[in-house]
Amino acid sequence: MRIGIVCPYSLDVPGGVQFHIRDLAETLISMGHEVSVLAPADDDQPLPPYVVAAGRAVPVPYNGSVARLNFGPLSAARVRRWLHNGDFDVLHVHEPLAPSLSMLAVMSARGPVVATFHTAITRSRALAAVQGVLQVVLERITGRIAVSELARRVQVEHLDGGAVEIPNGVSVAQFAGALPLDGWPGECGPGHGGTVGFLGRFTEPRKGFDVLAKALEELMPQRPGLRLLLAGPGDVADLGLPDVIARRTTFLGKVSEQDKARMLRSVDLYIAPNTGGESFGMILTEAMAAGAPVVATDLDAFRRVLDGGRAGALFPNGDSAALAATITSLLDDRPRREALVEHATKVISGYDWPVVAARVLEVYNSAIEACGETVQGAEPPADW
Image (cartoon, rainbow, N blue to C red; front, side):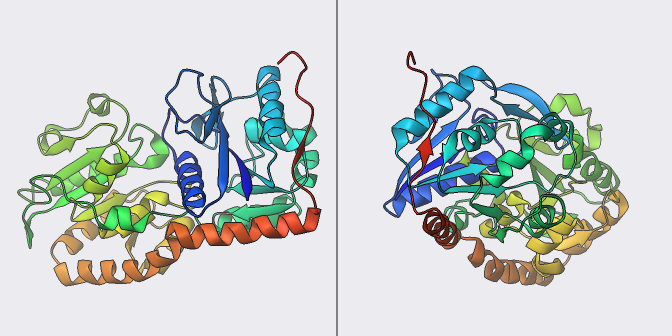
């Protein structure tokens, strides 16, 4: 099958949607399919061989964060050229309601179009800006996928349609087989030691790092040897961490996928203190695959991934004292940590990429059968 996939966000800034698209594309290729991914990127940016650059992205506020999107006449021309050259059996766009390449591709294509909705957002300035074409975009989508129940609910309640719920995938073998970083996680026992980890955009408020920092400020004076393993883009100096935390923090910076797996294998607890704006929680599945016990905010999306708290501990949103108590309880209780990991191992098997990709292919086949034709794109500019 010839598959065209459109990524709405720039590949030079890591994010869950970008990782999802990369892993899906590589899994489909490993299964024998031909895949081309169109994404915002500079023409001289190093890219995987299956990615086609669609030009530089610009930052746009979206869903409580800043997304790097690509939209405009030049982008539309590149989309049409890619569609024309691709001769795809199916077009798969991601986040088609953002002002992005995905929306342009839907507007330019005819035939089987599958859309994946990653976020559970119902209102935003970005959506308001494209309200006039929203219905047209939705009418041209043959099949819809939602990565979570929250994202699926938006389809039903706000976008006049349903969607097949297919979660984000995770490369279980990659994370389970990684080696811990040298010297980690170290000693952990009742009343002392232990390593907690946080990975992500720690300067972004909705990621909740300040909740974790308050919990650690309470715990570290009482718990000798407790350490923080921190990774993500940005400058840790901007956080202004208290000395008691800064002295026991190892900052890895922006890590590769290999080092991410090693980092997750190096902690006694992985902490996800996010305060909102999450429709799934890919880092949770990665930590679960790596065998790290998870402590996460009691967001609905996180609760679903963690099987109601059986595959990871949950604490009230924004409650640093409750987080501190949960960390202490788990670090002092190895059997409970092991029980969480055991249940997480069972849960995570359903998120393994070959399993997820097979379900996505079922949606592709249904869309192709419904349309009875391949993807047809508008003619590209004659002088392109």
